[in-house]
Image 1 (cartoon, rainbow, N blue to C red):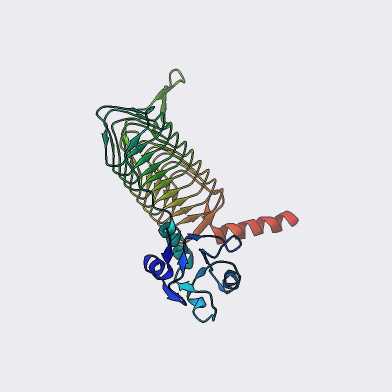
Image 2 (cartoon, helix red, strand yellow):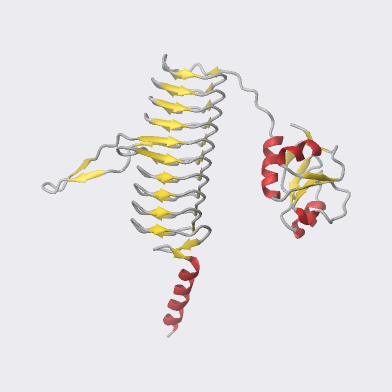
Length: 330
């Protein structure tokens, strides 16, 4: 979707230095850019590389304002963010038209919005509602009662259990399983056998969430598991029953959440983190990769990085490692 730099600047909240009539059609890395692409620079060294590239234009921070160059620039306070927005603006428009593949099985009482696309071998059960402009990839199974908002992208082989509600503009990647039973059992002290605790709650996913491939999110046992607006979940993450994840949380791959955990807004969870049941991760807490949080532990500190097992503020953890290293030498 070609745009002039003037048009693009308006959509990404930037201003143009140079010829605002230059047309760009896509984004690229500095190394792979063509004259029709726009690239970005986050500091002066990368700006020099970007200006020397084949790109037709460069997005830079305020540091680029003083640089004299024939190549036009978009100046933005957050160049990486502006570049991300530019990529969305330049993405070719997809004009959807309602299309249900002949191999799909759709319950007669399913409610489909305008221009819903349903791929091959999809199964849509009874009491399922799907909003306008949502796409369902091949082989996915959606069981009712279930509500999916408009503008969602559901990739192939996604399984959505009954009792799941999904907001608008949610992206669910291939192989994800949403709303399955939590891991809850009661041990019979007389026989030593385990019996299943009821898993009859719901799963609520708010708008603008992205869920990675092969991620699993359990329904609540008796109440609800909730994923807050704008949260981004990587591939191969497991979220147990009754977990409450706040808004704009970022969770990297292979992280595991036990049951009844609370993660407050703006937290950042690194890869392969393990969190025990009933723990609380406070607003803005940053958990480094492979950290471990003990059950019922509460971590607080907006913007404070934690690391290790059990997770501690990173400065404290590194001091302990240094002390152990000195003791080992003695």
